[in-house]
Every structure is written in C-alpha cells, then in structure tokens.
Image 1 (tube, one colour):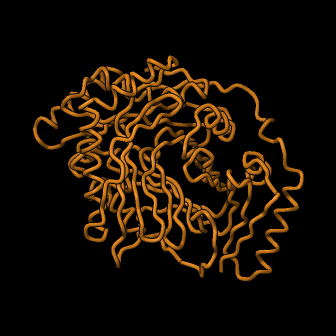
Image 2 (cartoon, rainbow, N blue to C red; image 1 turned 90 degrees about the vertical axis):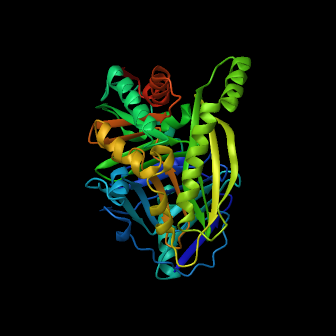
Image 3 (tube, rainbow, N blue to C red; image 1 turned 135 degrees about the vertical axis):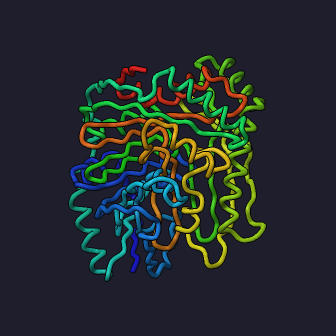
Length: 429
C-alpha cells in the first residue's frame, strides 16, 4: 500500500540530503530536476539487479489514491543497454541493463520548498517507522555539499582517430547513397581512468552545466553520471511523449553572435531535415502501441539553449492503446531514433558493423518506471559511465547525405567538451 507525507516548513538542500543519507550506501540514485519544467528531484536507494529483456520486468501496481503534484511512484530505476534494444530487433547478442528495485524515496519540490516522503509499505506503522528514522538521520544535515572540494584531472583517449571517424562518415554517406538509410547516428567513445568520486564529478558537472535531466545512479559496480538534456520517454496514465534532439550549434559569449548562431540553426535545411526524419521515426514507433490517430507532433523544431550548445528539439505525443503497457511502449521506441538513424533496422545493423565498440549504456536510456506505469526516461547522452576507476564518455552525431565530414567531427568533439572540461580532462584524439 502506498503512503506519503508532505513535510512543510522542512526544507533541506537535496545535495546535502543525498550526501548525508545516501552517498555511503552501496546503491542509490539522485535525479536532480531543479532545472526541469517539472522541478521535483528524487532521491532514494534499493536493491540492484540485471536484466537482458523487457519481459523480465514486471509492474505491480499498488492501491494509489495519493494526491501529489508529481507522478513518481515506487517501482524501478533503470539504465537500459543499447545492445539489449538491438537484440530485441534480432541484431547481435544483446547486453545487460541495470536496475534498482525501489519501494521508497524522498521527493523535493523546488518551487514549493517542500519534501514528500513516499513509500510502498504493509502498514501505516511501517511507513511511520521509516519516516521517523529519516528525521533522526537528517537532523544534522546541512552544508555537506560545500565540503566537496578539490580539482579533478584525467586523461582520455578516443577509440576512433580523426581519420577513422572521417572515413566512417564517408561510409555512412555511401550507405545513404545506396538507399539503405536516410540518416545514421555515428558514435565513438572516449575512455580513461578517473581517480575521483563520481558524486564529486556529478556535483561539479551539474553546477557548471545545469540540465533538465541531471542524474547520478550508483548501481554498486557501475555509476552513471549524466547531464542529459533529452527526454526519451515519459508517460502519465495513458498519455505518452518523446522529445528527440537533432541539430546542434555551439554557444557564444557574445550575445549578438549567439543570437546569430541560433537563428542560423533554425534556418538550416540540413538540420531541419535531419530532425524531421527522426520525428517521423518516433511517430512510426509510437503508432505500433498507440490509439489510432492519437500520435501528434506537439512541437517541431523548438530551439532549446543549454550552457554550451543550442539544439533543435521536437516533441511527439500519443495515447497508449488498450491492451498495451508502458513496457510495451518503451520497447517499441527503444533504442531511440535520435541515436540510431532511419529506417531504424537498417541503420542499427550498419552501425553495429561499423562502430569500433559496443555502446553499452551509452545512447540507451535511464530514469524510473513506476509500478503503475508512469515513467520518465532520459537519453544516456552527455553522460559518464564508470566501473571501478575505468570510465567512458560516448559522443556522436547524425550523418546525412549533406553532411560535411570535417564539420561532423568537430560537432562530435563539441558534444564531449562539457564533460571533458568539467573533469579536467585532456583528450588524445
């Protein structure tokens, strides 16, 4: 049974709360949504597990008559492996995705300056016991995040040399010329060793580059740190949406130049065509699990500006068909069209044969799925994935027939810039 309590006149900085209550646990998560249009941050922990197919997940709705301004409920916190999605399309041997089973969490409303304790418990007494334990542990919380100091430095190496990447762009264009694909999302990875606490990395990253889906998930053996700007999938009851990003330009410190750059992006036929192709792909993916005629493009070519880049974002909405589930919908859209190309099957088949390494969690998706089917998953881009002290950053971009190989290479480097600089990184390209 679900229980919740709103704590008013009781506000602690979520950064401090995470450090005080959860940072020493073997598994935990912190979804910082202070920069999101729905500013409700979520902190919690749970039991980890691994899975290689969506059929291994099972949603178990609890009685829910709670009235909250957010849709988060207990269920799963997940990081989806890109190759798991390919295997479900009949391509490759698959890959392991990571999960945390969550039965309780803290939700922080940044506008209300309020906190909700939320959990799935057998009785009111069990919920009250947990609530009181939280009060006891949090009594001395305050200022922990200010104690995170020290520079981070590391060196990375790109898996693809400049010559290799430029050749791969040409290979993609040949694939397009032969009519096998319309667009291809070519990627590579930067890898290195990081002798730093992922929490420190996360706090530095989100302070320097605020983003709507800033997240830290500690799966125990693997940590995911992300400043992702892109919504892969969101559902609330039967309403669903996805907001693919295609089209990128660097920001300028000069206001007039920055405005000029953004206007050029909005008028660039190549970028608009690339974005539209992915919107069509997402619409097609939605059609398989949606009510007839419910798939609509709510926003097309919306300019969104982040700390280091301007990007074009479109939003597709749909209504889940009767007999279909949230997991069916996610499986239908995964892997995301913005990270594959179109048509999807031929695109991922070609890319799997051309890229130098499996993508793993990069270009998959992460977030939460509640037992009642509500969900929020972001794209695993602008992300750092660490296992022990080995880490990787995935980068890439969409290739079309009109792409300039050198420009694509520079755009790929630009997308890595925010993370690399924040961790004091030097890259051997």
